[in-house]
Amino acid sequence: MYSFVFQLITSPLGLPISPLYEYLILLVLNEIAFQIAWNASPGGRWGSEIHWAVRIPTFIIIWAITYGVIWTAKWVCANWILVVSCIGALAILGGTIALVVLRRKRV
Image (tube, rainbow, N blue to C red; front, side, top):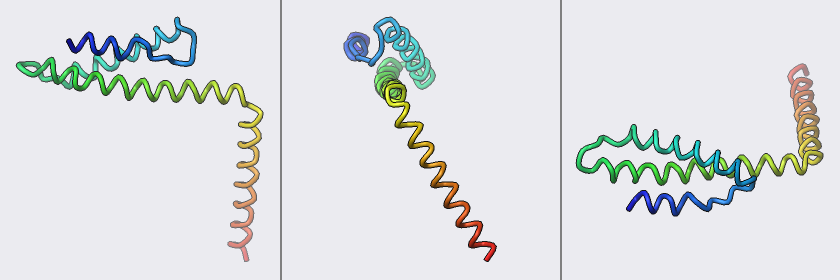
């Protein structure tokens, strides 16, 4: 039963990439979640329930982090001029603040 529910949850995740890469990423994420749940489960009478209780939330958390990283990377690639401009502005601002602080320490 838990396996069926897990398959329903993980099948249509909709990562913003091509389906081939999505299935490869999902395969890796599933294996990571499985290993974490396997190591967390003590076995015995409640072993399967503990395994699935750990595996499903772990997969969802790892998937959410992966989705955020992929989405951010695609956004940065699409808006690289804005990103470079912001980094440059922050560098100039940081340099100006550093110069002001150093000048005040000398005085």
